[in-house]
Amino acid sequence: MPRGFLTLSDIAPERWPGLWDRASLLKRERVQRTLAGKSVALVFEKASTRTRVSFEVGVFELGGHAVVISNQGSQLGRGEPLADTARVLSGYCHAIMFRTFGQERVAELAKFASVPVINGLSDQHHPCQVATDLFTVREQLGRTDGLVYAWVGDGNNMATSWIEAAGMFGLELRLACPDGFAPDPALVTQARERGGRISLTRDPREAVAGAHVISTDVWASMGQEAEAARRRVAFAGYCVDTALVQLAAPEAIVLHCLPAHRGEEITADVLDGPRSRAWVQAENRLHVGKAILEHVLESA
Ligand code: CP
Ligand code: NVA
Image: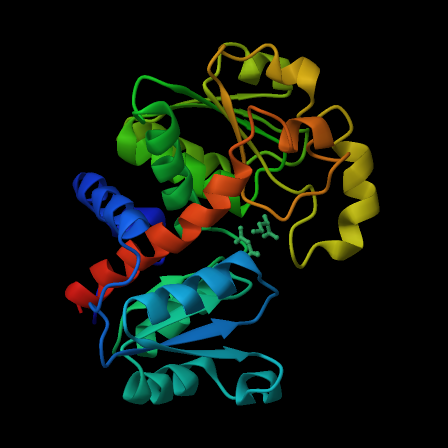
């Protein structure tokens, strides 16, 4: 079975500095031909702007060809099994990027594909985004270690990938989540055992005090739209606003994977203000996505 990228730890910690260096080079010299003659299927069962466009443009800039399909408009939407889809796409394409609901769907596709599969977001993980966020931290602050990382909000797919990152790289990660929205304790235990210095609190101020990197995300993720109103109540007090950011380290940066809801998880003045790196972070999805594509195709 080819090695894919289903969760962040599918690429070993020692490989990441080289991969991020490659992403920096690809940021400077965007057009390369490392995917010449190769096609990549981009399969979406959920909406996307950044993942869709950065992978499609990225494959083009590497000299390959991207084929975008969604649930609607493909036979997936009419119930063709993932296993059959995986086998068929593997006959045409050299890699498959998949955005879906449960992580078990990513695993199922990867099980039956004979080409590498990249997780472009599931309900449980968003590894391409957190790989990009760490690249952005390295680019903006010059290092990823010796920093305090704060997560404010939902213990969702982004939080899970951050927890995995904390375990892999021995990061200090403080998560502030409301009651009932904390991440899976088993994941936290596992990451702690690997060396992650992870603390959980209900108080965003405690998480952010002295932090160098503050990350947040929407209160209702894709697939949770029906819970949005209830979540707005539960997450009151978990908005990343100027008063909260003032508690962080003087050089602190604010990340948001986007899309954002200004006035909910983050205020407009923070997202559009001087501490925010959300826009370069979004651009970096392109460069890091290309380095991930090259990596999985090299090891295929
Ligand atoms: N951050 C991110 O994955 O954005 P999209 O949902 O637009 O792809
Ligand atoms: N947690 C969000 C991330 C979007 C990029 C979601 O899953 O909708």
